Amino acid sequence: MDVKEAIQQRRAYRSLAPIEITEDLIKDLAGCAQLSASCNNNQPWRFVFVYDQEMLKKMHEALSKGNEWVRNASLIIAVLSKKEYDCVIGERLYYQFDTGMATALLILRATELGLVAHPIAGFSPKKTREVLGIPEDLEVITLVNVGKHSETMSPYLSEKQIASEKQRPERFSLEKFISLNRYLKE
Ligand SMILES: Cc1cc2nc3c(=O)[nH]c(=O)nc-3n(C[C@H](O)[C@H](O)[C@H](O)COP(=O)(O)O)c2cc1C
Image (cartoon, rainbow, N blue to C red):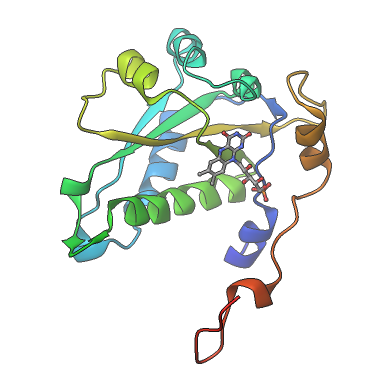
């Protein structure tokens, strides 16, 4: 699979079937994040790979309403960072940008491996910290939920989520978000 194909194949599916989580898989995904660019090569990302069944069950208590489908993920990757780990240039903070780029590489690699890697914002950072023993000063930016796409629709989905399984949610047109040579007001 080339990069463009991986970009096109990536989807935030919610109907997940179990997969075996091996040390090789974790090293493969983490190894792709490792190569990401970062400001001053600060590498501000931290990941907790959660795949122990008991730990996964505890993590389910951190999920917001509407994210019950995560119960079928075989791996939950907690993505962590803090501003002190990366460049702060005036008002510009780079830790989330750089951590996001590294996470995108991880997600694309998972896609290439035929997996779903679906990031969410709907979770309790407090509960996540409690369950995983994450210190207060580290931000829990997202949970990336990994499994195999299941053809059987997850029983946890709303009508809107079912529609998203069938068809990728619409995107803005290029004209909406690009300008050529000069910024064009909307
Ligand atoms: C930062 C972020 C937060 C998200 N939060 C959730 C979430 O809480 N629950 C969920 O089901 N999907 C969540 N998503 C997935 C988006 O809904 C999804 O990417 C979007 O609808 C586009 O669909 P696609 O990725 O399949 O193209 C999130 C995605 C991102 C990047």
